[in-house]
Figure 1 (cartoon, rainbow, N blue to C red):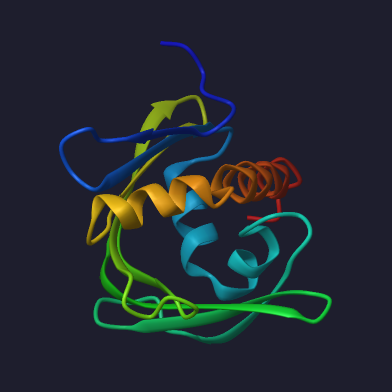
Figure 2 (figure 1 turned 90 degrees about the vertical axis):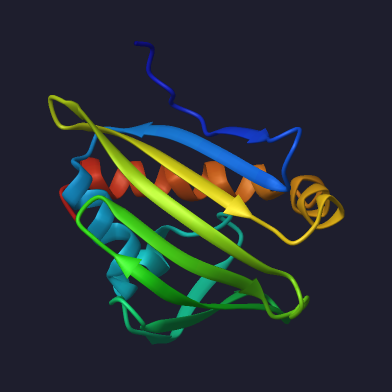
Length: 160
């Protein structure tokens, strides 16, 4: 099995779904913590050019979250609800507040590859093919790859 060191981002041809896959030198428990601990999450999510501030964060079944990303005078807010937070899976909604009608249902799961390595799988179901394609054309791969590189570094430094 080859190692995926940059996020593989794929659009499903039959459904408005984006699938993402990436390997990490981290355990499933570490990746779960990085996605559910608000202080850690703020350190790695998104492109390098943005800073993140957590508004609220309740990582439990039925909990909700909101964070704001900033670059100079620009501000981008995101929010959602945690539907399921389990040891190997997170199911949540995701909304960019700049497009409040565009709610995605996201499922993330952590595949233990052994030897302290984990493959992260993420799937985002959006409401239309147009919405999905807008996400793909937004430059999301930059934020995904830069953020995941920071997450990898946090794990390597033992901060997770």
